[in-house]
Length: 463
Ligand SMILES: Nc1ncnc2c1ncn2[C@@H]1O[C@H](COP(=O)(O)OP(=O)(O)O)[C@@H](O)[C@H]1O
Ligand SMILES: [Mg+2]
Ligand SMILES: [Zn+2]
Image (cartoon, rainbow, N blue to C red; front, side, top):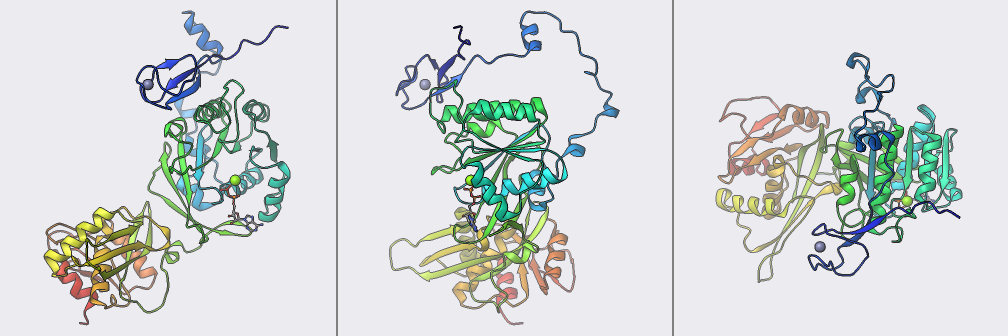
């Protein structure tokens, strides 16, 4: 019996790129250990590519050239799910022909979210395929019942074979194919087990191809490993158009979605969802969500209006300073760069007479949010000052501004947007820096401070 010619594979060193015919623990070329990954080399090529290889000219099929005036943009074709938080992080919905990796810890809610997206799009836009390698079709149906995702137009395929998944996508040509998960599918062209680096890359590469050829969106689920990446080396991220992470505190119900890479949108957007028994729900007032309490302010807490992407969010910064018991003091942060906090501690000491040398310092961004923008400086500094002085920041006050090493405050970018959000949430005062060297941007609610000492006085002391 004639066998199909086997797909040729080689073992490629992830460090030096050398190829070896068979696997070994050590790279024969650069001597690195455990760097060889089995990779498919000979892929069936398209007719056009074979033609090019032979140097032949391929006749253009009718309709190959389209007047630009007749082409609709990717924007126009985007698949909008209606789950606004997800659509926004994607850059306005899924782009046909693209592949998006959804990563996150096991149990965080990836399958739930994708089943919800699948059902929404099946309802509104056309046929959707959900390939499940992890759970049985009955288990997926069970979840669908719980979250209201039983709908016509949504097909289930339970398989762990890449070829079956690809066949289903090709024959069904769905608008969206969810593949749950990249770690459970395997190609029989490779000898490694499902979930191995070689398999994961092959699965992603073949699905990316299928997405492009069939104008299907592929949403690929991937578990995050202990090292914090999806399937080991970052190579997977290069094979997909966008990487969306679903994250959240294990015990809390808040889930944040953010893009680590997005070929079709910004990576600044953050989506906020809440895990409930009937699925992931949009949080109606995300800004309020990050304010831990509406109780009277306590020492060690300051609120900033952060601009994560296009949306302003009120975020509480919590600080605890406590005398350290000798030795070098501890400095620990969650949700903010520890080096930024070290700088702010130095600025407070030098320019506001607040010395934290003998104190342990802990800084936490409430609600599991991560803040990168320097406009949070002022709130962090005031939370520290407030904790040290054991005096709460004045009620109804929010802060936004960047601190320089000289202790000067620069007004936060897009201060008007932050101010509007502060107003909307009922804050009375926004303390910020001067916009252009002491100019008077006077507003009843906008208080400007030139330096950190003045900010401490405005934020902590009674007028
Ligand atoms: N029967 C249930 N009732 C309510 N919530 C559930 C139920 N089963 C699972 N969940 C929620 O769904 C989460 C698992 O979500 P899932 O989408 O399976 O995560 P992932 O695919 O990322 O591993 C659980 O942590 C839990 O919060
Ligand atoms: Mg799952
Ligand atoms: Zn090598």
